[in-house]
Length: 465
Ligand code: GLU
Image: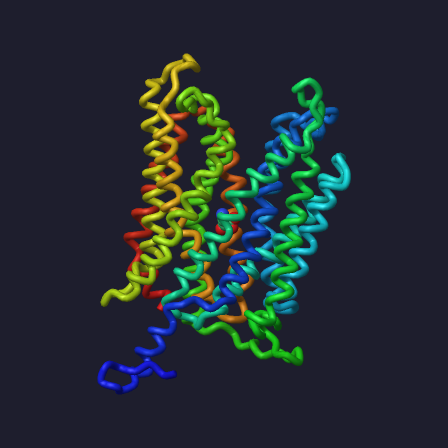
């Protein structure tokens, strides 16, 4: 039944559409759950990877020394964000997003099974390579499908990507807990309370099963909830004839340039943010007082703080973007949101500076800083992440010319490729440069970049129009 005003007249078309458009299409939730399982698989295996690499062979690991393990971990977490450039290109031109997601998901499941199949370095390298390749097909295309559920400039897009992002983080919240517990506890072989051998392989098995659940769900329900979206490559029609072969217009080129500029700023954001797995973890282990009422919080648990904050704050942000978009002057602009994110990540690092100051440069390892500093750091980093990461996905889907959408999603993700490599180098200087210099330096650089972005906001917005 059509909607009517109180006086019985039908609502103006646009009003009725806006009203109906408040709800998100069910396809969003299919993509939400598919990505949730994929990220469960990714973060589950990533969470036990370093332990698997560094544990002695006889204890169920591969016996790498710490620096080789760090190198393998850094290259793996970097290169999973390089291949989306390739997967994005192939999807735009030959495959279409749905097929690319299937190829990616199956390749990653085989990769996880390979890790499970044998406790050997050969299986490790083959498994990691398959995961890197598979992610390249999967990651840019699933994000792109979210955007395709909406018209190009639908005001619900930022909110939709924020909801999708919560799926990512529900997966990454539970993954280390489940895969880690399997690997380190349930499947460990113990004798007299002593661990003889860990069950890392079973952690990888759980990751493989998660990936398969996601794929089954996606392929069984895609036709029902997505219809024809993502079935064909953006450049071709059903019959395989090229439909998008016009050169880019001046305006389109400007928009693509904005994607590159903002991606470049975000490299610095991610390099700072990714310190969570490296310098922040090392600092937490040695210098944060983790003792709460006689209980020592394990270092790895702090990794769940970020996904926890994403899931709890996500709904607030999803609603906020919709609310702001209804103001007369509209939502905040993308460069404003990202500029704020860079400033907030700096505020997070200032909290770490607070921790360093509290310890007062003491050599004594028994002098610890309060855990509150760290909690605030992760809080600010998550607020920053929510203003940048889902917003970036949404921005790419709005600004990309149709024939380049998946490739440009790959470009956006490649910021994490460079950031993981750069972030690793920064973290490796923690001891030689000192904590104050590293945390303070990161805060200063990201703060400055945030201010620059806020300053050039108008210019970028003009290019985006
Ligand atoms: N936490 C995000 C994810 O796993 C990061 C994505 C990115 O680096 O852009 O999807």
